[in-house]
Structure formats: structure tokens, C-alpha cells
Length: 231
Image 1 (cartoon, rainbow, N blue to C red):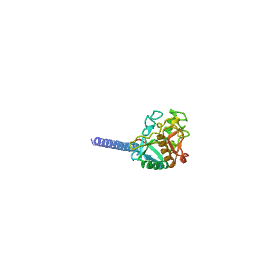
Image 2: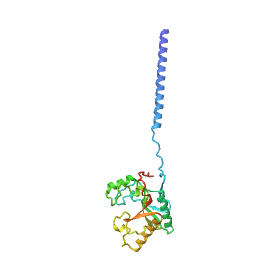
Image 3: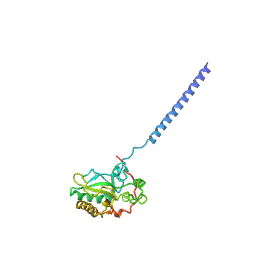
Image 4: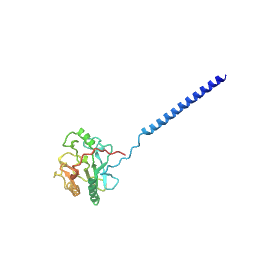
């Protein structure tokens, strides 16, 4: 009888040890899994920050009105190219444009922005849509917009009405050329006002587009690929 009791006691002790071992292993496993969950949990996305050397121009101030056309279908390819409309320029171009804006404000006028920095991938999308160098700069060459040194713009009055420039933005015809001479005196004066102020502040035009200006001395910069985030 004593041997039987002793045997039962030993078996109970062995079972208790086994259970404790299993519970300990389960606890270790659970702790390990929890640690993995913490490690593998996606981090919260950081708020987008304008890259160094660049500025964002918005209509939050009285200087500008934004109408970023490639964030809409109101453009020459009739497709949305940007997920959201934002205007970024390199510091030198932005600072020069601020000077133009201040001069126009003295005349109770403002700048309306159609397009600014255009990411390299968007240039590729435009080229895929219209592979014609007469209308779209080949992406492997890169446009001034891709370098963040060009801006497409016009002038609006105190009621945000655009001054008559003779054609719409992105009109591809001789009427949009600076050399076209058959516009009214009013249109010529409006174009001259824009061109004069832009050139006085370091911007250069191109012959075929009254709305396009760039900082020529920065045209050597590399094409940028970064894309902004939408709010």
C-alpha cells in the first residue's frame, strides 16, 4: 500500500511539472508573438514635407489664385494628370515670382497659376498620351517644369477675372505666340504687362506660349522625380 501511494505521488509530481513546462512554453510563445506584432505593425505615415530648396505656392495668401489644370480634365489632353493640384517651385524661381506678385498687387491684380513643378513621371504620362515633341517635351530630355524652374500663369483682377490674353491657356496656335500682332490693343497691353514684369524679375518667355516663363539660368538642373502627397 505504501508503494502504491508513493507511485501515485511521483506520477502527480511528474504531471504537474509537465503542465508547468507547457504553460511556460505557451507564455513564451505568446510573448514572442506579441513582440512580433509590435515590430510588424505598420508605422504611421509621416506628414509630407516640402523638399529642401523648394517652396509651395498656395491661394492661402492674397498673392495667388491656383487653377492647376493638370489636376482636372480642363487641359489639352483632357485627362487628370495630378492626384491633386499643388504648385511647387525651386526657391529662386518662387522668390522671383513673389516679387512679380507684389508688383501686381500694387495694381490691384494677382497671379493665377496654371502649372508649376511637374514630376518626371507625369511628364512620361503626358508623352505617352501625346508623343509629339511639338506639344510635349520628351521625358528623357525633361522640360523646365520638370526641373521646378518654370511656371504657367496669367493675371486676374480684383474679382478673380482673367485679363484677356487673346487665347486660353494651352492653346496651340499662332494666336498664342508672342510674335502674333493681330490682337487688340487691350490684349497686347495685358501681355506686355505680364511679360515685362516677368522679365524684370529674371524669367524668360518662350516664343509660342504667352503663359510660360522660366528662370533660364536654372535650366541646367536635373529633372526631378519626387511627387507631392495629397491632403
